[in-house]
Image 1 (spheres, one colour):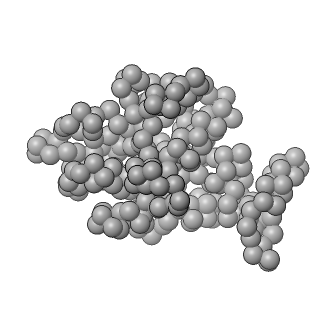
Image 2 (tube, helix red, strand yellow):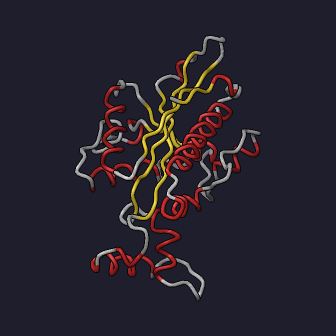
Length: 238
């Protein structure tokens, strides 16, 4: 396997609102959400409560991580590239973040790089903020304090695709479509995660979706780098 493909941890996170509904927030946080919601676009009929159900999980101050999916490339016995995936998921955010941190700290921090789609704007800062909220010290690969921009070991496939063009957001699903990468949206998509978690109470469904996103992310990274897709038989879920 080429050096540029080694020591990359591909990741994706799934997040939901910190409580099932707006009324379960304490009074102090209700005031804070009302302030936040006043800046959000909405239809005339939408209340602060409606916006909370739909969008709170996007914001780390009002959301929590329920799943972290990861993947790493390896040299498959077939002679081509393989991918191993694993997920940390559950209702206990602190426990799953500690598990994820333990994995990061077992890897060589001097060479490890993290890769996510829109990771620099969402996944990486969200993980850092929620770790701090849960009194978890940041692992070296996420602790950017004092680092120069070129020293930050983070890769972002959306940034790679922009080639310096910062005009718009390009979804992982759109890029998967144009590169003929099988979609991860098999019965669920990101906007439904909050409902699947609180209404259906189906964490496994969310975990499976998160891992599929990690696969799509890894495949996209390879295509952007000019490599072939990983055969499905070379993808292993731990």
